[in-house]
Length: 195
Image (cartoon, rainbow, N blue to C red; front, side, top):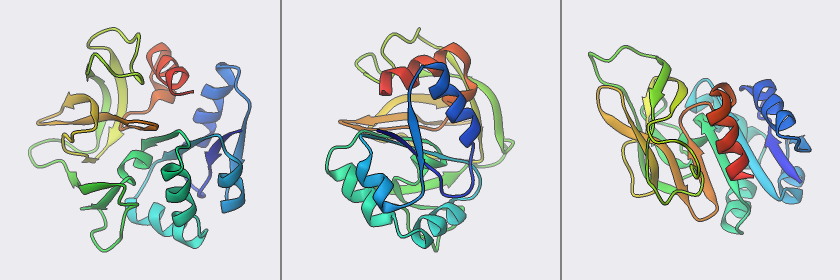
């Protein structure tokens, strides 16, 4: 079962539309039981890091989510869903992330205009499975004020005043800072690769 985790906010409809366009059956889940039945998990996210993490804690799914990821269930975090994989964010320094990877999510420094909204080019690692078949320097759509620095798990980077992780991939865990569901044919191909 492909599960889209619904924590009460986010870009669910566009993610649902993308999976529908790919001909995939999926279920919206909001609890640990739903996560335990999932064979793939998508965690879309928009908004505020602290709000998202508090919502996951109020739904009592933090540990289940980590347990499922550690058990090898394929996971795709979208935008804030990717940022949640790290220990913390400057957006809400008092709130813990999932901590699957070390480090903090940072705010774009001045003079960069935030939020960074619009199309930007991916510089992809050629061996990435998530980005397999994607043309070099393809454009994808971003909407964010915070970024993950370039990490060892980076499958692609972008430049917006500085270089940052645009996509990450490590074994069965993937994340994208951009919105594949708003990135046309390139975004569809990336979600298809994950599935």
